[in-house]
Length: 74
Image 1 (cartoon, rainbow, N blue to C red):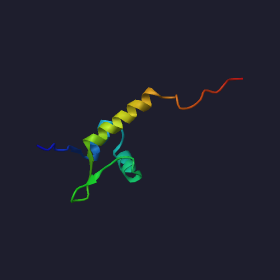
Image 2: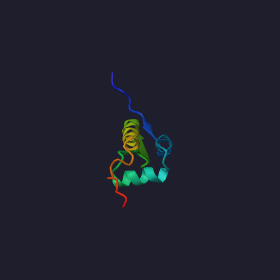
Image 3: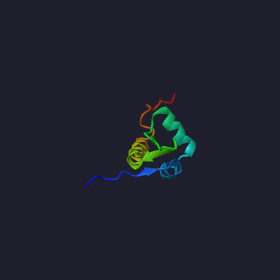
Image 4: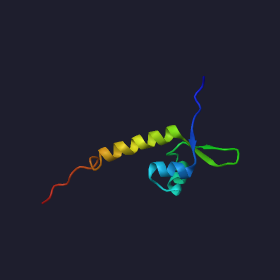
């Protein structure tokens, strides 16, 4: 038995990720998010892609500020 994949509309994906629909469109254009197009040329985002991005966001929040070295104060 095959698994049926779930796809979200850009509005739904934006709500899940806490960003705007315009951000979803920009990420798609930049190749930062994987989308498919329907026969009517509408974007759909796989639920697996939302999970991946949520994981990436969690990693960024955990390490917030750790990517830049601290500057010494004179």
